[in-house]
Amino acid sequence: MEIPENKKIILFDGVCNLCNNSVQFIIKHDKKDVFRFAALQSETGKQLLQDRGLDPEELDSIILIEPGVAYYKKSTAALEISRDLSGGYFLLKNFLFLPETMRDGIYDIIAKNRYKWFGKKDNCMIPTPELKAKFLD
Image 1 (cartoon, rainbow, N blue to C red):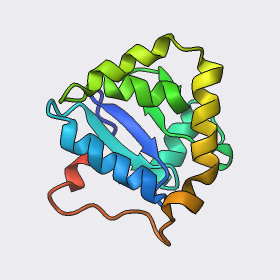
Image 2: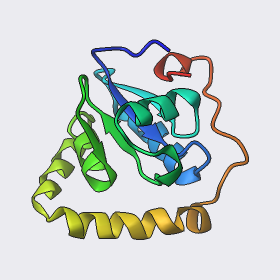
Image 3: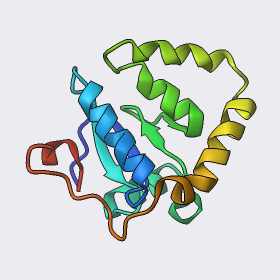
């Protein structure tokens, strides 16, 4: 598994429609080619989680891994991702001033209901040939 040292890695739920749509949105607005992606369910995703002491079986969160050892979960990950997006979405980072417990409370409600509200795929997303270079598996 080759992990790019100069890219931020986003781990996402590969069977969640909301998560897959979010990945497509991020790719569209990643004009500086900052991000690479892996599904939480993939071998790469599981290994990256284990390397950080996170249990792959207990996560229902987006994870942002910064080059080095730093990582962010849940609402903090989403807001940190917004820093690098084009189109004014970087302004969302301003919500980091809100208490994490409040932000994550809202995040947890969405995460808990994401399959019911947005649906679920039987398998992880398979990227198109054009997008394959952005995915680690």
